[in-house]
Image (cartoon, rainbow, N blue to C red; front, top):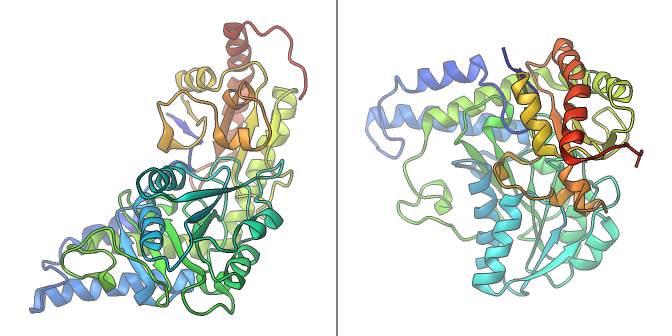
Length: 398
């Protein structure tokens, strides 16, 4: 049986979500139809929208269901860019998810956007002062609520207030954060009004035990944003097309169950990741844990342990652990199969060689102490073999 330690990539479908998805498929009707079956489907869809909105502190009309986090990010960034009233710069912190990086790169190449990069500090946190200096006059700004690789939490209320003060619309990618730390649109937006400040937050269902292929962009009713897809006018005209009623219902069910577990589950995961961190010190003494030093959710996502193994290629370690029945990651699953150094680790100030020597262990709802113990049993031998394969002879602490 596989020991699954890659919950940041995706996590197990919750029974509540599966049941909600199956029940919704028993309802026949297009939610845009005005006959009785269509309106039955519409009620299911809008009930789901209300649930998601209530948990993330938004109005139901502000929740736009999408096919996932990547589409939500694209809608936010391209939509805000196309609707901009001035400026050509996009404020882009280093270490963002590739959904953001690749979208901004496309806007720069195809639409003439200018990129204002903002560095991270040594633990992966966005430099607030440099973010603040980059925002004035920009077309838009974006940031991760939590870094998807090293798990660092950013000060979103402060970043949002900075954007609002400069009259710049701000998007937050909360895909990695949802379910691991509170995602609260209204609280993060603060006293901002109009089309500036925090106006959009992207989330995805499969990170909280919902189905893959379902997500949402929370869009302020005051935002100025253009759609990616036209035809039909659904969801305030921001995403045309027949809506996925079953997917929305399953997302709402999964998010409700996750929210009910709340702080108790985050504390459990923090304790479990602390067990892993302590075990690593004995199993591989020269391993370097990247990101914030805290094990709890105050500074980093609960359940995230990101480790540099000097002299051991991450891809080799992943393969060896997979042979032992342990699933881990070298970074974002969206870049799977691409042999390149982690751009996040590079943003921390590490070398390209070091950025190829990392693994991300991410714990989730189904993780147990036995999973951590199994990893710690197999890890020393895997590291030794990986180092031998690279010709590494002596491990020197970083």
